[in-house]
Length: 71
Image 1 (cartoon, rainbow, N blue to C red):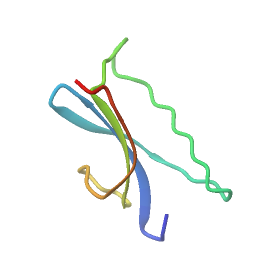
Image 2 (spheres, rainbow, N blue to C red):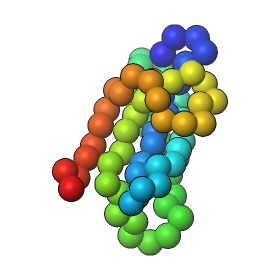
Image 3 (tube, helix red, strand yellow):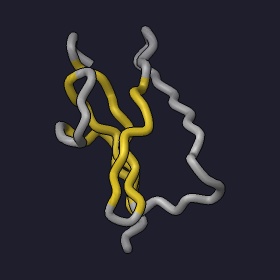
Image 4 (tube, rainbow, N blue to C red):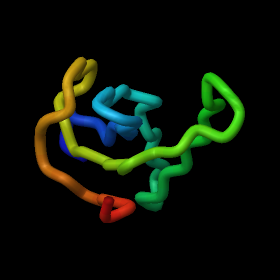
């Protein structure tokens, strides 16, 4: 990402979307983010990686990766 931007991972459960982390990118351009769910077995409607300004508190920006259950 450009200076001042970062890759944010957002997940949606029901009607609630929350930030689960910011993906640190290494010098080769790879990133890995592991997060602990707040309960066993959550079912996510979607997960999105967005390129946003650092510290963003709402999901907006350029989608880089989108996973959706289709339901």
